[in-house]
Amino acid sequence: MYKNLIICFSLILTTFPSLAQQTEKPNVIFILADDFGWMDMSNAGSQFYETPNLDRLAKSGVKFTQAYTASPVCSPTRASIMTGKYPSKTYNTDWFGAPQPDEISGHWTRDKPLKPAHYEPNMALEETTLAEEFLQAGYRTFFAGKWHLGESEEFWPENQGFEINKGGTSKGAPSTGNKYFSPYNNPRLEDGPQGEYLPYRLGEETVKFIRAHRKEPFFAFLSFYAVHTPLMTTPELEEKYLEKRAKMGLEDHFEPEWDTKSRTTQAHAIYAGMVEAMDQAIGKVLDEVHAQGLQNNTLIIFFSDNGGLTTAEGSPTSNLPLRAGKGWLYEGGIRVPLLMNWAGNLQEGIEIQTPVISMDLKPTILEMAGIGGEAEDEDGKSLKNLITGSEDLENRSLFWHYPHYGNQGGNPGSVIRKGDWKLIYFFESKQVELYHIKDDISEKKNLASQKPQLAADLRSELFEWLISTKAAFPRPNR
Image (cartoon, rainbow, N blue to C red):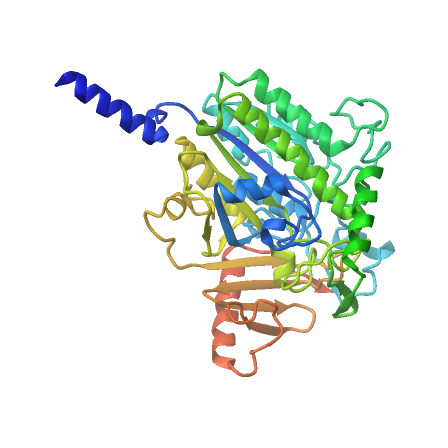
């Protein structure tokens, strides 16, 4: 009898590996892309870009179809991931290094009707970051790639909870040395062989960390500089996509977007090469997790810090059917890919359509790792029960506040999304745009004049939230 019970219990543990491993601390690998758009995965429908490793993450894990960043630009979103707070609360509302309102006299925004709001160019050391939570829980912590969360060394990863920092500085792009190719001239990343490609190097550094700490719980944050400008890839990948572009008969097409134009075709060969190189580096990390037998005890997250770049700096990608891209409060600027994968612990190949936002990632990861969850002073909600299917996420409004002129053409504004309705308030014109996102994902039909009461109600709720967060506002430029 006892022998049969032992056999049955063994079968249960074999069938449900999470039960066998619940006493272990799970590893966490967070992969963050830069400027990677909602449509930039072949799994999302791209016919030009090739992302087999991201596709396998999605196929064997959970894919969120309505995941949002806290901002249409990078630093605010990155801070929201680390803190679990809206950027309007921490005043990290613009990319770090953007001109302050008193510095615009020599800037391209000097003749704009508004002075952008003041913002804090550092993620405060007083914040308890996601990495610090893991460090306090006994994890080994590692960072590789783009940081862009502080103007000086005092605010770099090693002072924000990461034991190891490979490449994270104040820079928002690889703008020193040979940029995407070694020598990098990066004070936190040793130069590699002449011509070494940065995405590959960051993947290799992550692999080395996993291999060295495979017997300890670890938190690895792989934060690619790709696919941010400057647009640079290897000659082999560029040639591959030039040939693919010609074979597919692709051409560059654009459509008007306010005072600029937005790309409507994915046909940029160099950008496609950057996408594939990043995907290859991700593949190396995934392969190492499996090679070490860690797949059943490792939660992997993939996310982007804002939407794809469509209206400036080469306009390398298209987010269609989403409108516009990086720097804009339309869907193309804030809706991004989000994948979660944990072999044997999460359902495979499911899609979640519930709107979620970058502040949710911190409490979700901490709760899934069993070391924390939602904090009273934070804005994110844990998605654990939503992911496991045990219960839906309560209805809530989501908010955005970008009181700045975007380098890509966007104007200062704030947003509320409530259910399927989305309202954008523009500070310059003091006008609103109202869209039903479920029926109009491309935000072509402004319904504000047709539904004035709904628009007024949403505008009121938006400003109540702005006031409650003590948000900073743009001012007249006199």
